[in-house]
Image (cartoon, rainbow, N blue to C red; front, side, top):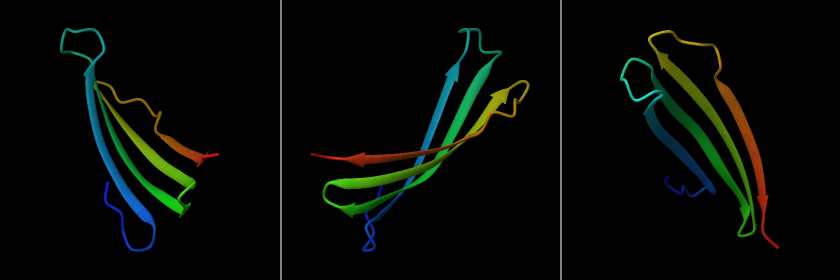
Length: 71
């Protein structure tokens, strides 16, 4: 993550895991997102998760949004 001068953080994340420890079913997840900070107490997160399963890909990508407020 990197904070820009516009209170926006671009986010990139990569995950990989084997479903059954055999090496023949691997899930790779790429996350692309943005965090926007309204102020020191409020943040809006928007993420797109691209899921690439092996050997057969399933259409199950996700768009996630979360609002975080501190009291």
